[in-house]
Length: 109
Length: 153
Image (tube, rainbow over all chains, first blue to last red; front, side, top):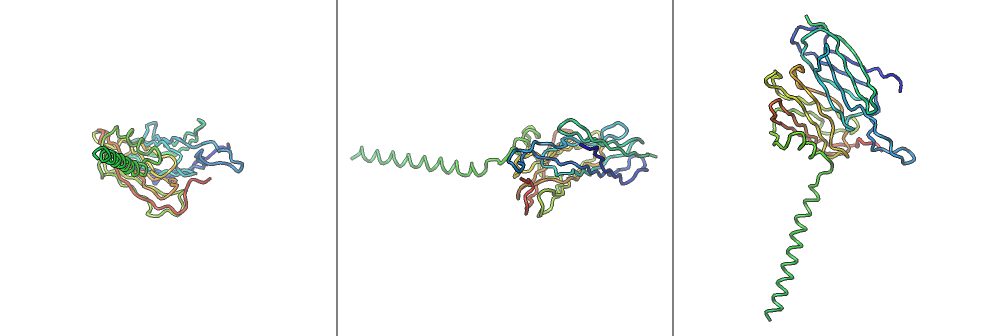
C-alpha cells in the first residue's frame, strides 16, 4: 500500500504549561469490516486500523482501540494537557501490523 | 368417574405447563442479545452496575448515512492523579458486532473528551460506559435512527 500521510491539526502550537490542546486527525484507510462480500460472493477479509496512540514528548496522553464499527478514513479528535515541549506523535496500527505515523510539535512556555 | 377426571386434570396441567414455557421462551427470544455488546459491557465493568450520569454521549437523533455517524463522548472528571477517567467503552446494540471502540485516558489527557465517526447498521441504541481510576463505572446511552445502514455489502 502506498505511504499514507495522516492529516493532523493542533488548535495551538505555542501553549502555556497546563493549557489544553485539541488534536484533530484524519487518515485514509478502508476500514474493511470482514463482513462484506465481493462481486463473486467471496468474503472480503477484515482489514482495519485497530489501535491509535498519541504521545507528547514520549509520554502517552491518549489511545484508542478501534473495532470494525469505526468509519472508513477514521477521524479522531481529542485533547491533552500540555506539560512539556516536544513532538506530538500519532500512530495508527493496522491489522497487518503496519503503522501509519504522523507528527506535529508543541512549544510549552 | 374419578379416574377420568384425574386424566382430564392432568391434561390441563400439561397444557398449562406448555403455555407457561412458551410465555417464558417468547420474550426471552426477543430480548436475546443481537450481538456481543452485553458481554463486552460485562467484561469491561467486571459485573459492576454502571450508574447513569457523568458521561455525555452526543449522537444525532437521525443519521441519514449509517456509514459515518459523528459521535462525541465527554466524561465529567477533574482528570487529576487522584481522580480520572481511565477508559471508555462504546458498544452498538444493533450492529453485527457489538464493539465500536475503547478509549484510554490518563491525567495527561487533561479532559476526557473524544470525537470520532462510527458505523451503525440500523436504528439502535449506542451505549458508552466510562470506568474511573477507582473502578466506578458510569454510563450513557442514546438511540439513533438510521436511514441508510452502514454495513455495505
